[in-house]
Length: 133
Image (cartoon, rainbow, N blue to C red; front, side, top):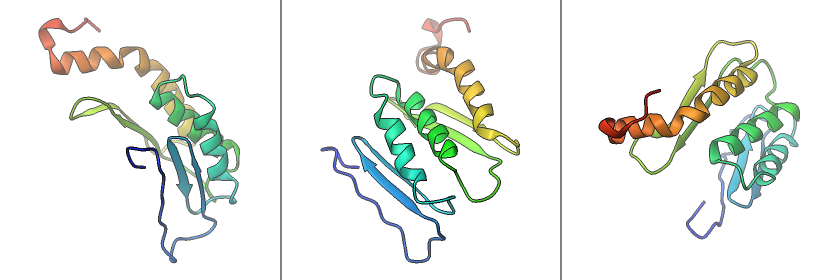
């Protein structure tokens, strides 16, 4: 995605099927080894449907919509959420590994972390002015 909002993607000829891509306002959703081609459009639609939400929440909703639409072909045991904002380090960097239901686990972790995120950033940027968490 460029600074004017134009989107693009590339996937090579050797990408495993089913592959899917969808472009929308401020989003490109894509994947391979998916249950079917409708997964990426569901993800992009969920992202676009919540423009008033923080980026991390919009990404979570997109992941959840992709899973609800069929997700990947086969078992998924890992999910992560990484968002970089104004600093040189991630605003959000959450990961669930080796879980039989990683997206619900990531959702719980995100909901626990979200109210604390600004405080963690403040602690890194200006520890003397950071809230007690």
